[in-house]
Image 1 (cartoon, rainbow, N blue to C red):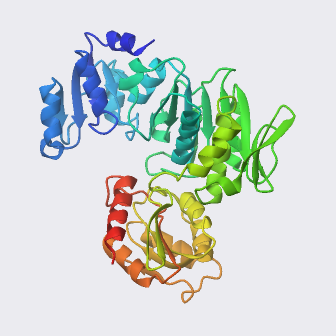
Image 2 (cartoon, one colour):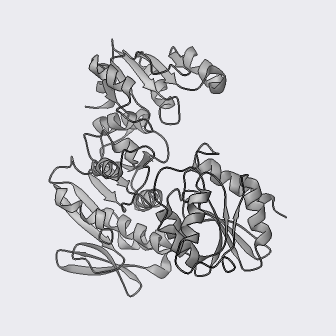
Image 3 (spheres, one colour):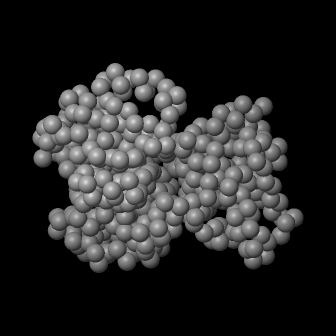
Amino acid sequence: MNLKDYLGSLQRKTVAVIGIGVSNTPLIRLLREDGIAVTACDKKSREELGELAVELENMGAKLRLGEGYLRDLREDVIFRTPGMRPDVPELCAAIERGSVLTSEMEVFFEVCPCPILAVTGSDGKTTTTTLVSELLKAEGKTVHVGGNIGHPLLAEAGEMKADDFAVLELSSFQLMTMCKSADKAIVTNLSPNHLDVHKDYREYVEAKENIFLHQSADGLLILNADNADDVALAPKAKGKVLWFSRRKTVENGAYLKDGVICFAENGASREVLAVSDIRIPGTHNIENYMAAIAMVQGLVSDGTIRAVAKSFNGVAHRIELVRTLRGVRYYNDSIASSPSRTIAGLRAFPEKVILIAGGKDKGIPYDEIGPEIRTHVKELFLTGMTAEKIRRAVVDSPDYDAEMLPIHEYEDFRETILAASAAAKDGDVVILSPASTSFDKFRNFAHRGDTFRAIVEELK
């Protein structure tokens, strides 16, 4: 089925779109441009939506806003926003009445005319997705980047060609109800995450599995051989499995040997990329490169891989150097919304750093971050809902010394940054790496990172 056919199937049907946000606003426009009856539903008020409410009504969409936006859903097709669980009572009631529940990403998988290369995992998704897309582009391929980064791709599916590539970052929320899988899939790693939305870790992992469970025998799954929960996925794969490992040699996949990323397959092995050629810092980025290299085998030459590694400066909000002021380097790692991601960021620096952390609590444990902060941090500045959990994890870690690692807590985000800056001396690193989501004070991690960057750029 192509996009035209799918839109044709919605003629004479009613559609509800839940959530008037980044991923669904282009969807509403697409549906209305094809004359489909759309009701746009959102918890926001008309005042909060502002001019967007007027724009949507002018194109013929009905609006259902405010606290009762999910009440009595009776549309034939309902598109849920990625962050909404599919089993909320109102959606379940609508399904019982005969509504079909779907999402922008699920439909994209149905209509996409080109190969889909997708990345999921607990950490490293965005950088790995970006690397895959940059490698393909550098080889001269036409690439469409979307999913959890970039922009929604469904509206562009009609323009895509069979020899293009769709490269997607997919979250557990997007994958929860997926019944199709990517042609090639990477699971970067697995660790507890988003347990404020998922019922438990098992459900979180099961959502991630949908990125490959529905592959055919021609599918490709790339897994982290150093992550036990990743390894446990391999028996479920219907297609080919490749591995990547920083700690050991693998027979099929990418591995690290004497400072060089090598690739092995079918009994043959070759050197692909010297780690010294990778511009972005951190051992976790070596893993991201290994996963991407495994993904693009047969599509991208080793020479192109080396050229990209020497020029690629990384992705915004991921250990992004904001500025150097009076010998102090300030890094924005706002994407680090979990302890494991912050740990990876801390390990990227040879020296002890001044860490700014804390944010919204998403119900995950923080025990593992305590010893890492004690080892890699010289002074800790905390803010947000998780401040106390992070502080307790550090204080309870073995051999904690309050004089060697002072801990400060502030309510205000700006005040936290200014205090960290005042404590920094020539040669220090100050890094925002929250180990928590941003939704206690910000719209998303990018808003938090942009705010951090603006405050740092104002420092004198």
